[in-house]
Length: 120
Image (cartoon, rainbow, N blue to C red; front, side):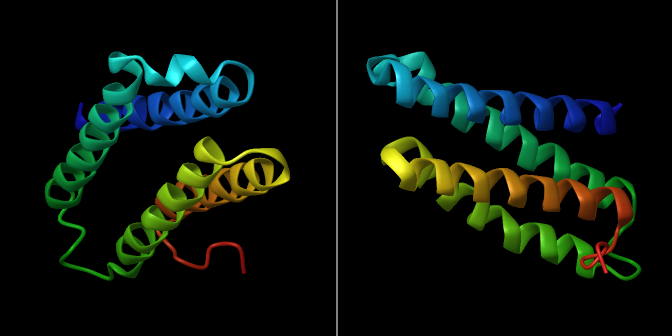
């Protein structure tokens, strides 16, 4: 049950991020609305909380947990690139957006494979 909630929050965070970058490009005034300012933080908090519950529910700290650390280290990178993608413009926006999407896929790949270097 918690896993499905977590995956739902992953999807909602991804869709929310893409929508906010598009809104920043097309109609930046939308991002000033209170709901659109607060909703991403609520979604991210729920995603993080459900992830913490999964870690303890799955007893993943008992074994090799380097993959969890990799996800936690990649998360601020995703957030930072996302902030640049939403706040800046031009080429910088799209480079940061591309980087954020790559980091997001990295985090997802680590979660699926339970390996920090699953791509090697």
